[in-house]
Length: 175
Length: 195
Image 1 (cartoon, chains in turn cyan, blue):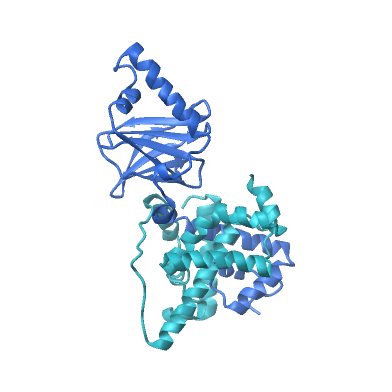
Image 2 (cartoon, rainbow over the protein chains, first blue to last red):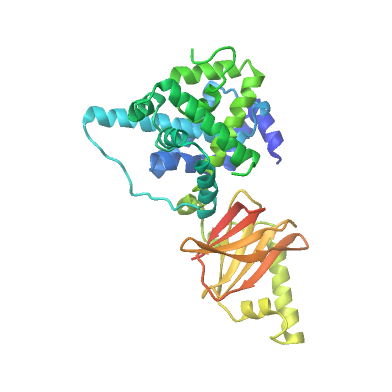
């Protein structure tokens, strides 16, 4: 099956397209959720909830948006971040830290190098914001507090950083 | 409201998961009406996907990579296996053990299989248990660069060559590796764990 037809059928909310999308992209989504949640069961549950939510509530995806995989991975990432932040708030309330670090992931050296080269092109301020907002899953206000800078500056730096990363990682301009 | 007539910078913030629930919902509502901003959000999501591909192959290993014997054999693999058996059966009696290094190595080794996992076509590697040779077979005629890794260091083994419906590479090496990668134009496509 070609992705184009899958994307069109997914945008029309056909049940078989949800199943096909789960088979095609579920593993990638689970990997993304796992990196954030560090718990295989929670990651699996997160992906299932994403699909259930998209099915129940509908979604804004259409082929004009771009790749279905990118949309779904972003959904999984956002759901995992929401879950992570909720867990953080719960732990702060309970004054109890219970981070499960038993599941450690090996990094792929080739991709890591490619992304590292792209990240190295960012300004120091942009790199700090990406590190906290993207990799550590902090909200914009948390990043602003951590770096002691206005939230508007955080927004500007993160947005500019992702546009720069897009030029290098997606469009293919040299790093 | 975090943006004006169009989402602007909020597109990247949305894709990065850096917005509050209310801001996130505002972007969703806007892109449902605005094709220009929908495209910009889609582009930002592609960047997120590119960043998420770091770690992807290795972190699939615990749950998604199963030994060859536990997986259903794909249809494309059957003629390849049959052809390999035919080659072994025909070449060796006729030409002796010096003519086909791949056949010789395969005949005289206990070998194992592993499946490549990633975004590419179905692909497998047969390899000697002592890891002295690797035979990579990829569905389709496209040529991929084959890299072998151990302890983070990589070595280029060569490019797969088109042969019928598949593309293949046989490599006899002195160094045992624990991971093989297929790359296309330098970009990682899929990888197999060698155990």
